[in-house]
Image (cartoon, rainbow, N blue to C red; front, top):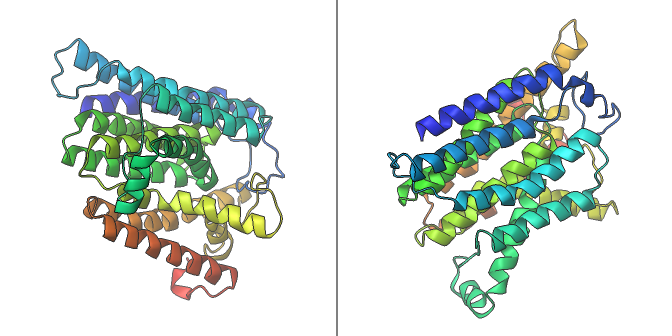
Length: 367
């Protein structure tokens, strides 16, 4: 796995560097008046392309190692990995097309991630076999199509959840890296080395992208990067539960509760105001932290000042993510505790959001 990680990291880092060097012209397409824009200058949004390349090369190397080189790492990777790549492709292409043109509507992007969800069921045979509660498991057993529908919904929806939290340097990328490593850790605990290898390779490619994204902000993941993270992590989460009966289905739910709840809460607050969920705004949790918790930075250069303040926002959310990742990893087979932590996160999020909106944030949280 170390060899796969090194190669995936280097390929993604080199590809990202080339995009930074030659891809600045396309960045001018992204308008200065976008509400979710918190940087100055034109920054390429094609980090997703580097991420796809690094991940694909890492996975392909794993398949070659297993099929042609005697499988020294006992990864048991085979040509089924090609099916995973085909599942990722529609969402990734749609995201990268949007990053290049800024003309692909939310409807078309959601359709493409939905195609990825359908392929996850058709090509990879993914289905949710249980939900951790006897009565819900009975419903799934009586109506197996519900398990398939949940897979399609997860694979189609999680990419957009990652896209929502992709607002500041290092935010979505670090969350994805942490989640991938947490999933890989539990996969190794239950002996699923194949799935762990795919996740570690994805985390390594994400690290190669982060070299250029944080803290310098020279490259953004864009929709393409968010969609790759969402599809891969959704597939890995469902596959881990499907292939290993010891893993609670609430383990990946707690791991991903931050981007998932951010999306649900965003839809709710927009619906209350009569606004379409597809309309971008600047009222997400991470944006409020930027505006009302992170103090202003004094610097003669305005772009440098904005960059420094941007970089100070992400660590708040990294810590917020670890508050769910740590208990998820510790209690990955304990459904009641995992459900309790999910509920605790939802309550904590809403309380924190309301505190920020009402200017009741403690002074010790301001930097």
